[in-house]
Image 1 (spheres, rainbow, N blue to C red):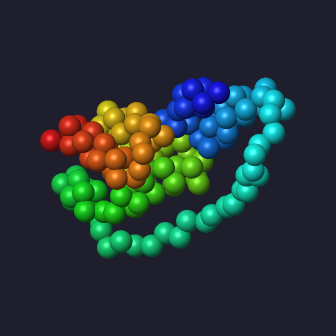
Image 2 (tube, rainbow, N blue to C red):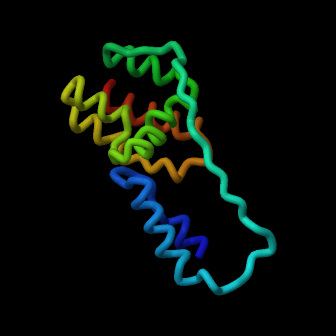
Image 3 (cartoon, rainbow, N blue to C red):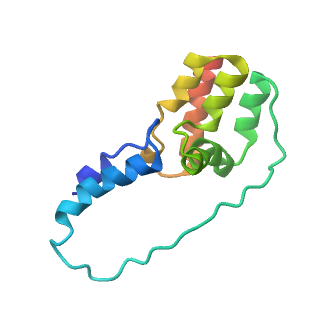
Amino acid sequence: MAIELSSISGAEPATIEDIRRELLSVLEPRADERPARREFVFVSMVPVPYDVGLKAESLAEFLDAIGAAPAESVAYHFITRRVLDGIGRNELSKWLEEEFSLVEVAEAPSRIDPLIFDNEHELKAEIIKVLERELL
């Protein structure tokens, strides 16, 4: 089952509902197989966004700002906003396409699956690598 769960992709255009359905398709058939040793306690959270003092009005400023932004900020724009809005598209790609009509460039980060990274810093590094390859 662990292999099946690890193969679930979080790449776009998957929404949180798509991922939930896929998780259930793996877990439901085994729901009565074995009791747990300890209970699982579900919690919830509400992100508290705050301005980190970085803005971009050009592609050069955009690349510089992503490099300077905290990894948590990049992850927020790449994952959290996509999930909260249910739009299936990260804000970085949306901005590149809407502001500069860079459809192909915007598609490159959209192909990144955030679920394959161990932490936000690795995800940020991959996003920067992809954007630099596409823009420089």
